[in-house]
Image (tube, rainbow, N blue to C red; front, side):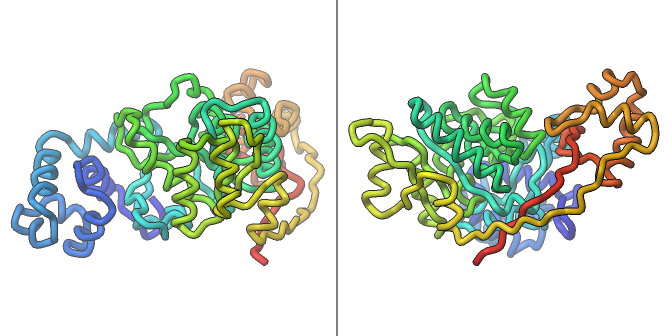
Length: 377
């Protein structure tokens, strides 16, 4: 929950309405405007729901949901999954997404969405990429991450997963938007990748727990990918690629669209080449093209570089285990033979001293010697 957001006692009602069939963003707003909060709306009579503006079908769907689910159990399942919700009323709801049409009332989140994720670019493309696309997503996706830009994509096979991996390899942040419940990783072979994303970013979805990855879920999911981002880069897409749906959403949202040009004879580049030809996308050959088009000026703020000088033997042992690659506290404990309680307390002090940095999931890296921020020219 964000500051001045939805209290934990009310979160379950947001979850309940999100489960109810036919209660989308427009009806969420109707209910909030009429009742003031969703607990009152959940307990409302048929007549009161009708007075709020719900049609008969939506009322019947809501009644059925009330009778078939336990809100407390749904909240408990979410907590057991290690996930949380962010709602419209929470201060930490992603600001760029908040202002798009049909912004999801509820987001289910694993990991952390940080203020710096406001500087994000979506990278999407075909599920069956060629060597050219794989090379370019590694270069551009990695360069975006190295430039301090969060890479957003959809965890799908092909370009999406390659974009996430490129960002992680570059030491950057990445966000994956799912077309299913937060408790389901699709495709299943990306389970390990999803875990790494949670440690260095977040996986999010608008779909309730248990929602299967059905085909109809993915086009609406794409509006979140583009909505989180300053712009969307399409790398390899056929003329009917789902990545083009993301580009369409970006255009509707007033965001920039970028495309990597490809071989005119390649089916995998028909969609991207058409975007460029139609003037819908800016041609991109390197990360500088994206940063320039977004009018972003990189402001490097060199922090005072502290020599990581340990003050005692425990700090020295722990510091020897930590590098620029994330390491979990359990592994530090194994390497140093120190009790986990001592490892965590020492790491907390080292973080306060600016020696190490937690990157989520109890993983630590050495503190960066510089950070990057962006300003809009």
